[in-house]
Image (cartoon, rainbow, N blue to C red; front, side, top):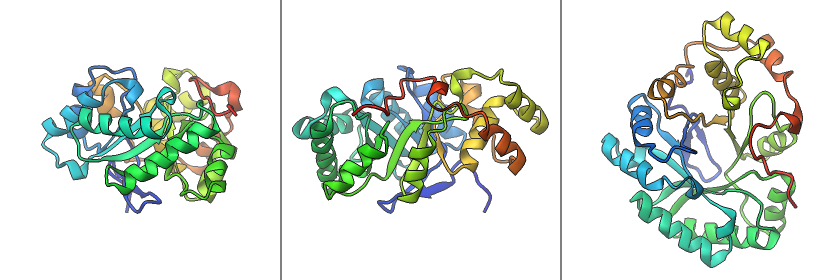
Length: 275
């Protein structure tokens, strides 16, 4: 079946997550964007405690009239809140802010708190999931060593790892590890923060009569990633989902793949190298 805006991927927890999601970072009044996205067929919204807009996201889901069970919502716990008890409190606070009985996916936002707190936070998320408050749990900005420490502790591995991921910063060792272990790779900054003047990207966009943003999202989808483009522009929210009526050729995928600059291509904080 061809990909569509609601095409899902199966997480290790057994739950389905729509591949394309709306990111709401730096969008404190994100209600209109969320409503526009949901009206356009999106069924996945990516928030975080750090974004301070969980309440806006929850309100938009309710206003949309779409059943809660049909909208996949993610949040994340920021490193100052890491620790077992503080994580349980953060989960409860997130549920209150969203106005939800559960969150579909809850991530550790980064590995910046150190191994001891990371593992304590992960254990708390496991317990919150077993209590029915979270359906799936995962990590963000984790490298291979960070995920391996979870495995070595005898704990369940993450369902997803959300990392900066786009043609200029492809993080191939992390991506390959996640794919080998059934961990879904989510791509933040998939639009390279508007850096659309690359001649290869411009040429490919012209060939398919699409804009560069649509080419970038399609590239991400064809790699099996879960791209999370963010925008507060309602028209852009809609056009970012208009990526299902074409397919990039193997040659064009290869041309875009060749743009990788490794860590030098990062356009965000990308803290995957911390101990």
